[in-house]
Amino acid sequence: MKAVAGLVVRRLGLLLALLALVFVVVDLLPGNAARAVLGRDADADRIAAKEHELGLDRPLPVRFADWLGGVLTGDFGTTARGQSVNDLLAGKFPQTLLLASIAIAVTVVIALLAGMWWALRPAGIAARIIRPGSAFVIAVPEFVVATILVLVFSLWLDLLPAVTFTDRSGFPAGPQMLILPVVALAIPQAGWNLRVVRGALADAAAAPHVDNAILNGLPERTVLIRHVLPFALPTIATSFATSVGTLFGGALVVETIFNYPGMGAMIAGSVSDRDTALVAAVVTVTGTTILGGLLFADGIRLWANRGRR
Image (cartoon, rainbow, N blue to C red; front, side, top):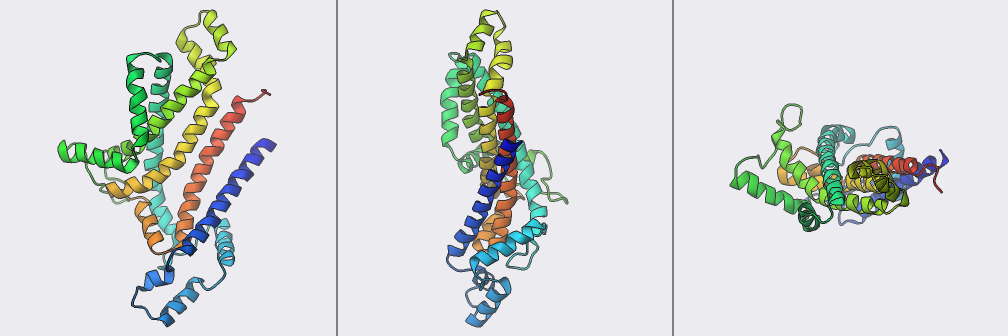
């Protein structure tokens, strides 16, 4: 329990440091929220009044402490334009969470199946395709993959929509709206993770107990699943947990390309408005989600290493 508590404290400390950094970085950007909201034609008196209204005339540490105190009570405050941050997040975060969740599920399935296949047949035809193919997709950013998918499946083949239409709930109107965004997010991460899976399985397969299992005549699939995979699981889980953060970051870009109704446009607008509260709120929500994934991976590692020295 002490080890788990220590992990939670360290992760929360990192999130707190990241939020403080967000406040500092946004504060260092040219201009401020008052000028962004009022526009270039606003006179000095109006800008000063707006700065006072938004609390921008207070020291940065005080503003951060006040905002953090509100977050601890569940209140993310209001934007520079007077909108409730809680309402904005409630309207956009579920859509981004849906997109990223499906993408990570697809990534896990592809990476596990392809990585295990590669481990079982390291010199087979599939391995000869997977090795260079995975290296290629890792090097291609999500926005490039998204652009290629739109070009091929929307413009050339006219099979899937290039933009996302929503229904009354604010979610995509049909499952076909999710296919291209999910694939654009999953392809690079699947390429990376299947190489991690293969490497972790290869390292675990070198353990002496695996040789004993093979000498006892167990089928190779049984050896892989029962004697190799459990020892490779901590590394694999950590890689998948890290991909959660990358997928959320990539989702904000992919959403813009497909006009997906998530937090992508919202975060872009908040940076343009120098809206510290909204930027920090998005970082808090996504960071907490990523934190949960990392803690899950930490738990798997502690479970897999139980009883070992």
